[in-house]
View (tube, rainbow, N blue to C red):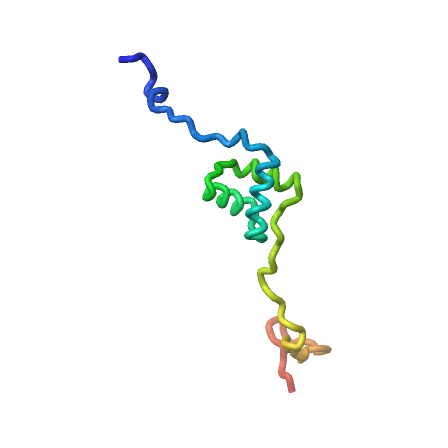
Length: 107
């Protein structure tokens, strides 16, 4: 036929957003983080892909790290107030157990 390898014949170049500068990428990241303040690198990169910008996650991490745009951490679990905890008395204080696996009577 033509004499080209099959991989060359079927090759389709991907879209490269390398012409997107770091400052332009930072503006896009800031817009995403204003809308979703708790988004980290993975979610920001996924949101960029949803908005039509294919950017490597390592580049997104580098830009966010260089310019201090890491995600604001949210508290996952709320602590209970100290009045809600019950304090149980130590019933075995100053007692010597009669055997290794026995505590003895509490009377």
